[in-house]
Image (cartoon, rainbow, N blue to C red; front, side, top):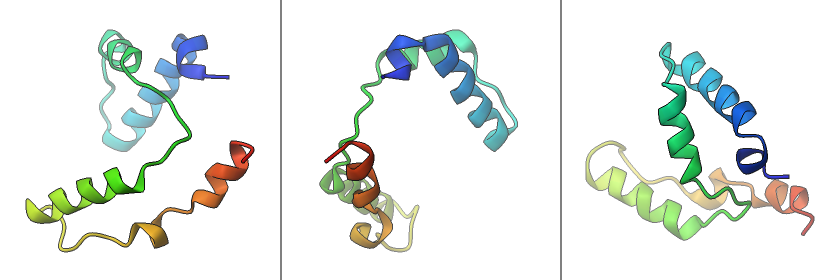
Length: 84
């Protein structure tokens, strides 16, 4: 089941709750709904794209170094949950 598309009200509340817990600020429901409508939920994790993003963060000075994503991300858990 894709909770984002099948139960958008539940999804908006869950995401808003998490954002509020982390930032002490709650996003507006309509803005969050619009953002989630453009979100494609997938089990696919693209380590190449994550690596490019990490390198950009390092280059911009937001991180001292890029992490070794093979050590940081355990794809076996995702594959198990996806039934692969």
